[in-house]
Amino acid sequence: MNLGTFKDLLISFADDLYNDLRERRRARVIAHLDADGLSAAGIVISLLERLNVNFHLSIAKYMSESLIKKLREEPYDLYIFVDIGSGDLGLMKRLYEANKRVFIIDHHVPSHEDPKVKQLNPFLSGLDGDREISGSGTAFMLYYEMTGDHSMAPVAITGALGDLQEDNGFYGLNKEILELAKSEGLIEVKPDLKLFGGPDYPLVSSLERTVDPVLEGISGNSAGALSLVESIGIPIKVGERWTTLSDLTDEQKRDLLNELVKRAGGLERAKSLVGNVYVYLKEPKGSPLRDLNSFATILNACGRTGNGHIGALLASGRRGEVLLRAMSLLQEYRKVLAQALDRASHSIRKVGTVAFIDEGLTSDTMIGTITSILSRSLRDTDILVGYASTDDGMIKVSARLTEEGKKRSLNLDKILRLASEMAGGSGGGHQTAAGAQIPREGKSRFENALLSYLE
Image (cartoon, rainbow, N blue to C red):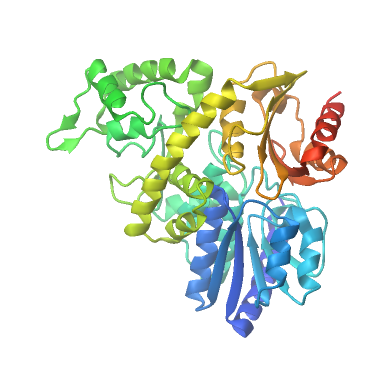
C-alpha cells in the first residue's frame, strides 16, 4: 500500500473541495444506489451539513448519457459524485464543458485520468479499491480529514460489508478504519451466526428477516421461524423479552445451524451464515442497525426499491420515521427478492463455464443482488451474468465471479469493459463484480466477446 501517496491525494482533494464549497455554499450530490453508495452518501451529506452547505441529493442506478444531459441543464456549479463516476470520465467531460466543477469520491477503477476532474480514488495512489477500501471508506477518509471526527467509521464499515470486501476480516485502509472504530468504542467484532439484526435482535424476527441465503419456509415467514425455534426446544422468551441469539448456549446454536443448513439448501449455500459479526455499539440492543451486516441489507433494500434517499438519510444518522420507513422497504424487498431468486435459479442458461440469467425475470435494480447471491453456490461455472431491461431501452448487465472464477483470477472489470465496448455499450467495476449497459441489439455481440476472452 502507498498510504503516503493516498494521504497527499486526500489532502489536496479536501482543500480543493473545501474552497469550492466555501465559495458556492451549495452542491449537487449524485450517489450510487447500493449499500456502499448509500453509506458513502450518508457520510458526504453529513459533511456538507457540518459545513453549512446546501445540497441536492439524487441516487443513480448507473452513469448514462441521459443523466449527464439532465445534470448539464441544472443550475448548479459544483457536482459531487459518490461511489460512481470514475469509470465514466468520458461522460464527465460533458459537465466541465458546461462550466461545472466535478468532484468524484469513488473506489472503482478509473477509465483514465482527467486533470479537469478532481478524483479521490484509491487506485490513483496504487491502492486496491476492490479490497482495501470501499466507496464509503473513501468518503469517510475525506470526512475524517476535514472534521477530525471518527463517529462515521461504522458507516464506512457498513458500506464495505455491503460491497463484500470482508473476507474473514478486513485488509488495508478498511482494517485501519475498523481498528479506529474499535479503539473508540464504536464497534465490537466477534464470530457468531450471521442472522439479520445480529446477536441482540429477537431471534424469531432475525430468522424471518434473513434473506441471504434464503431459508426455505423461514425467510419472510414468521410462523415458520417461530415453529423452527420451538422445534429445537429454544424458548421464545426470556422473562418478558424475546429470546436473542446471545441467549443461546453453544449447543443450541449448533442445533439451530444444523437446521438452517437444511433450509438453505446445503452446506455451500449456508457458508455465509457463519463468520464475523460487526456490532455497532452506539445503537441500542434490539435495533436492526446494531448489526452492521443488517444495516447494509437495509440500505440495499432502500436502494433496490427505488428509495435510496431513505437509505442515505439513515446512513447520515437519521432514525425515527426514517428507520420505520426503511424497515417497511426491507419487508417489500424481501418478498420481491425471494420471488426473483426463485425465478432466476430455475432459468439459468449455461454456455461453457459462463451462466446467464436472461432479462425479463427481475428489474435492473435487483439483478445485481440476484447474481451476487446465486453466484456463491454455482458449480462448474466461472462467471454468472445477469441481464435486465432498463427504462431507456438498454440492457443492464451484472456479472459476478463464482468461487471457481476467483481461483482462476479472472478480471471482470477488464472483461466487461472490453465486451460491452464490442456491443456498443460501456461497463466496468471490480475484479470480482462488474456491470455494464449495452444496447439490446448488441447482446449477442457482448456474449460472443465475453466468451472469447475466456478461451
